[in-house]
Length: 437
Image 1 (spheres, rainbow, N blue to C red):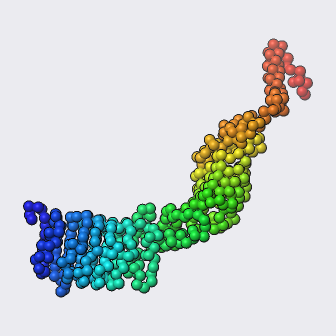
Image 2 (cartoon, rainbow, N blue to C red; image 1 turned 90 degrees about the vertical axis):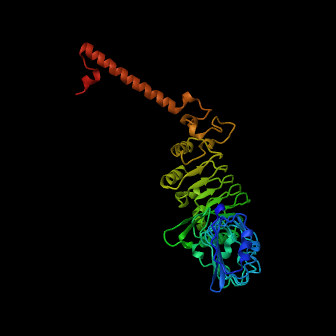
């Protein structure tokens, strides 16, 4: 043994063939094996188990009087079979500090005296409730595993007497893995289950995106949930009247919605920060003017609707006071390009290039009789906006006024120079100056 760098400590009062049998099952016995006769029963401790799998049927069948089994600190990843029926005295199983992540659903079914199961600090991402279907099992420990918080672990919420969840001793210490790293498992699963029930009242798909913990005790009420609801391409004529609680992102793309009024009037939209309502039939956003929603939105996608104009002053005011505003999409609409609307709209686009993300797609409506048809609004000049193509530019009143004013300026300057020259030459003041008393 010494030549193979194997350490084995044996204190045993069972027949020698039992120890020899377990050693024959392992090709490389680079683990510490201790078998102790304690309190009239038997304890088996396996440290640094050398294999990725452990076969209870093969390894433990001859340990018929075993009462406690401990497997610790190893690279074990899987139990390949259920525990054998012959182990009729086994009361406690500790598998801790390993990489165990897979168990047969019937792993412990044959154990008629099992009372305590400790699976802490392993690599379980999910555990089927059927694993705990052992009538004698009283205490279950699961903390320290990277459990996925999904609907599949909803059984943990069942607090009824005798349920598997009621036997999980360290339920309050269970934490979620990605994407809710470090968040308490039970309240997260409560949120997921509640979300599923509320989502049934809609025609949408719902997903819990992220959870932020408030200061204090981590319960469901101390968690801020961010939920995404996808109602895209559902043939909706109106915005949904009901949304699941804590809906922060709402997708309504590709429907036939014309009215945005619910954003300003329906309390269901109070938590919506990101709204995707592109490719609908929206003709106006005037109903949002002065609304709380416009002052706190984070993303608004209005691409591909029927917008021709909008209240630029209201939107400008909202963007100045809304610290959340990050993304606004207005492209692929049939925008009016005239002297009444376009100058203020153009100023809005130029002042907020970091928020208005698709500025290159914001163009004048396509019309066959306009030189501005399909041009980028940001790049239009005032002359292009305010002078129509059928007007004779040299007869335009503004141009005539400009010519007259320029002529008067030159006339005044010329008279001033003449009077200065005349005074230097003759010493006489200009006639108008001489007449002034």
